[in-house]
Image (tube, rainbow, N blue to C red; front, side, top):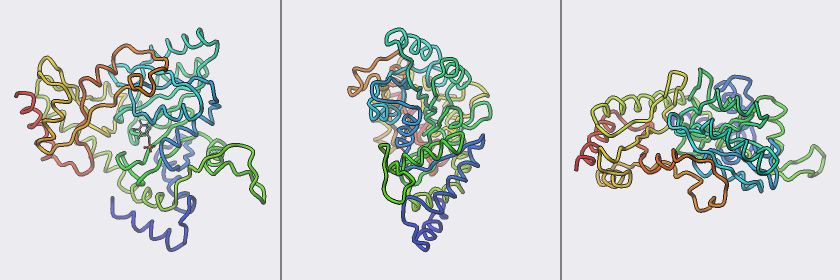
Length: 368
Ligand SMILES: *Cc1c(COP(=O)(O)O)cnc(C)c1O
């Protein structure tokens, strides 16, 4: 917390705005519009998952449709496809960004059209660990096939691609304010739309699809997905530190990079070119099993014994039991990353001294 969150919460209590709408929600949305620019009309919601669900509904996804989704991601990217009664079609990553491979995306679209006679209804591409996806090629392909692109930028608030903020590339962008993300509202998310009419449509579905009548009239199935005015107060406080949080995450990644330059067999995941400016939400490494003689699980356990928490990379969704029947267009890239990668401590309270300690401990663990 920055210290200023409490003031916005106190204001909400003083005005008795303890509901899922109110002055903090309006102000938070307008601050987010300023942050994202590019004609962004954001809708503050109860979670990033809710934002993905609404993006799919607004893209017209219905029961029996197919939706293409990056396989290398958190399950929340794909679960809302199933909420809609649709089928996820998983696409593997490219090695440079770890995000959706444009070549495999195109192959998947063509093959689904050939097999089913219908186009997938939407594409969900992710900016994983804050690294922007290859937006030049992905937006080109989506446009060529006229399929809406949903950018899951849950982890990428503050990242840019070609100078443009992640979250603004698709028909819809989604951001998460869960406790572990770049900023938090304790739990929450936002849907980034590009016109006010679409944002209003999202607010309509997020407030139980209540029609404008003097009584409760319902012509669509709605959801209870709006952000509370208290959570939005936390978000407003967090907006005062978002730039410094992003700066700190980038600083830590640069420091890890410098310190790892002398460690053989450890490769930090970094911007593949100057087009990409990751927020380095998490600093992540790939461990060469031949040079180091260890895998991520051995390293994770060794670090744990020194009180350093690390986490495995996301297990690709096409390898998850719950999605075992889903079609997948994969070439082994994400499976290999899962077998070799680790996320390192990267939060706002990690110090330079912590990073030096962690890098020393990793060197010790892999030399054993
Ligand atoms: C966190 C996350 C989400 C979901 O956001 P919530 O606010 O936790 O619902 C979706 N996609 C990715 C890639 C995430 O990391």
